[in-house]
Image 1 (tube, one colour):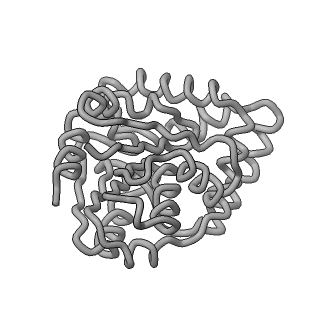
Image 2 (image 1 turned 135 degrees about the vertical axis):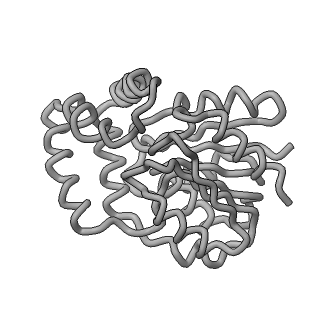
Length: 231
């Protein structure tokens, strides 16, 4: 079966995809690609392409989806199918970019916990019974990655390019998926992506916000399975 490459979001690692790795590694090679060591989306994408199989299925969540779109732009012939989860095809707005600078200053001064706990984590999840456990996992992932990764990823996101043309020119099985309650990358953004990508399929996951892979793993896996099996 075609290998599956998964790209996590900002300040997340392979633990973001634990339910997916458990489900799909029984039948195919599953690779969780890190996006830690570079400070541009293009460099991160090129690093993943250098290590990835010659041809693969690609799924990315949030910042991981942004990197996935750059991979699709650079090497469309190597991507068999793509899933874009809770992400954004547009360039960073001036307003959001301006918010990053004070966050980066706080993190540079030793305040990574403060930024993750007070400014980022509250925007991630729906109000569900597993909310606290997932928030704690998010903080654990972020602290394990550390401030240098936060700064690299912030710079990469600030300077990303608009990928609308990449999506318009794509011709492959595509899943556009998001949590119904996602505030960071709302449903309307995913409806835009679905319109841009011919033949794509839009899935809205109920009872989830920005991290449906953990919030609603069974619903998310069902959507991913349909995508992996589609023609």
